[in-house]
Image (cartoon, rainbow over the protein chains, first blue to last red):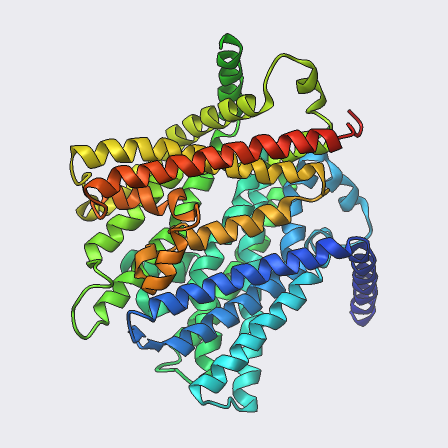
Amino acid sequence: MNETLKRYLGIYAMLWRNSVVREMGFKTNFILWLFVELLWFVLQLIFVGVLYMHTEHIGTWSKWEVVMLFGASHFIQQIFIALFFTNLANLSEMIRTGKLDFMMLLPVNTRFLISLKQVDLGGFVSAATGIAVMVYACRQLGIVPGAAQIAGFLVLSIIGLAIHYSLLFLLTSINFWTVRAQGVVWGYYNLFNIARQPDEAFKGSFKSFFTFVLPMLLVVNVPVRVLIQKFSSPTQLLMMLLMALLCWLASAAFWNFSVRRYTSASS
Amino acid sequence: MKKYLHVANIGLQNTLVYRVNFFFRAAFGLIPLMATIFIWRAVYAGKTDAGDVAGYSLAEMISYYLIVTVVNTLTAVTEDDWQIAADIKDGNISQFLLKPIDYLAYRLVLFLSGRLTYTVVAIFPVALFIFFQRDFFVAPASGEHALVFAISLVLTALLQFFISYTLALLAFWVLEVSTFIFIAFAIEYAASGQLYPLDILPPLVTKLMFFTPFPYLMFFPVNVYLGKTNGSELWAGLGIQAFWVVMAYAMARAIWARGIKHYSAVGG
């Protein structure tokens, strides 16, 4: 067990090195993309500013609490993009061109390789801007989160990350069944949009759907509630853990099911 | 003229291949819209004075976003800018320099036929969505408003296209235009009225924005539809919009002329 872990960590370190070398080749592009991400983030914050020019509260969420939410969402989303997104977005192309065959032949777990092959370093820089906004929002709110809150936030963010990963992996596995599903991956960007909204604004079947089917309203809201101690009951917390587990199991099951059916593109 | 009809035919057939993608795009695109509507409902519910937001009642606010969706479906540029940039980068435009066909006209016809396909596909999710929000879907304010809205819609589409076309021509000078396209898209998103009605911003900001072409990419036609623009302002606004279309067209032609001099047909 320990040997396997060591081996995979070694492989992952190599993949990291590879990605750094690759990014260094396109420095201008790297900086321009950072600028694009920053611009969109600022735009989201402007929208919050515009909303709160006309109101004091959304549900019980105040302006700086929502800014906190947007910052945390940006943080989680960018880490997700840095580690997984590009890889999963490439899966449809690998299936279409038959490159997946080569991946399967390698003496490494295929799911490991297609999920983690490339690292998008810009994502980590953008994630840092999310943290900066969160720190600023904390000061505006006049709260200093303790070590326990910060630890809780980080652990829950990782669970949020696991939810994003499992869901997108599940969605992209549809590509095994039809080559016309590339759009699905890019459609996922619209779900990020839900994740950063304050959960209390939503009602009815929309809320149920984005809590129990695609648990977007848990991914960011729950960690932030822990961080700023805005908790009424532990139900949401348990819900998030349960949904993360379910999404993970569903994605694993669908992956196994799809791969068994995979017959390669070119033969 | 006949050859462009032929182009339109090709355009329709090519885009029909992407109908499933179009459908996904239209359907997924409604998710953030729904979120925005929920957020606005919560904002109105939380207002202590039970008043409106900068002259918008809740119903008007939701109508605003519904009309934005309609205008967006009919006029937004989706793939065209990427394809133009790719044509330049891969040297595909060389053939247009030799043939008696104008590249701008060619792309415009492809854009319009692409919009037609997109609209036909997107009509299902969009209509279903509007049906659920039907209490807030209003008819144009009057016959005159409807007429101005229709003309404005065409001008919006042209303005959208010429701006995207010009941006894509940057591919003559830089290898990777996607970042520029995303930057322009972000600015347009914030300044055109897609994210929020422009007149809920501080009055000075709104005023300044009207010196740019951005409000004419979205806010103006929606405003006309909802009857927020009236009387002589209707036709004056249309005039300004037409002015921006001509400017964008001239810009597209000028940049093309310069670009083609710079062009060296890599791999063409």
